[in-house]
Length: 239
Image 1: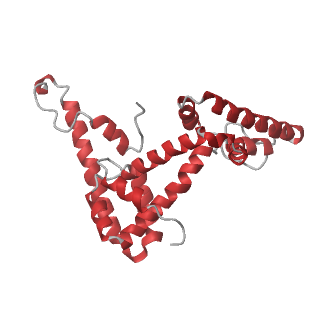
Image 2: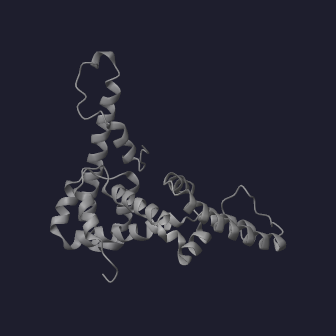
Image 3: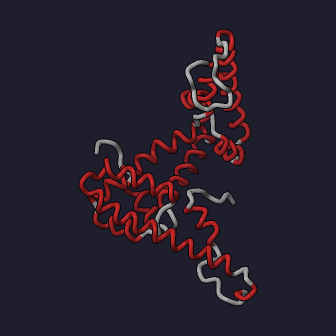
């Protein structure tokens, strides 16, 4: 494989005690991307040109704001909005609006202004940094499955995956593994459904503990059932 492989973070994630190794890897990438964005890089012209063009999604703007580097965020937002104002003024001079509904997120090609706004709405500097490397993590998983017997054992012993990342592995396996896909899917399905059913049972017991008849019964594994169940749905609790 000509492109870079990321065997160490993949191994580390599958060794971790978590409900979805891919969620863990993505959270680590997000933390790194936030730190990079709010570090000295925001003063570099090349990076500022990209943030000016892409902007940020709502989720990552909130996390950038929570980072406390308010001056860095202000500088990025200033030059980003400078560019947005200039671009949109230029479009406003020649765009008649076409027949595109503002409420529609799909472009009909009828309004360059609305095409610009929708494109701006759909891009995020932090997301782009995350997804570029995360795609390589997925490739690395399939590469290691083919080449590394130890990793196969790690994969089979993990606690499963969230539904979204299960779907990514399910879909990507056909192209990545070819004739070895079914063997992979057998293991993938087993660990996914076993993990989902285990957490589902823990949530059931969490609910049952609110029945006065069970108030003295042990919690078993249900005390943290809710955050683990949220992870299985592909989301994360923000502390």
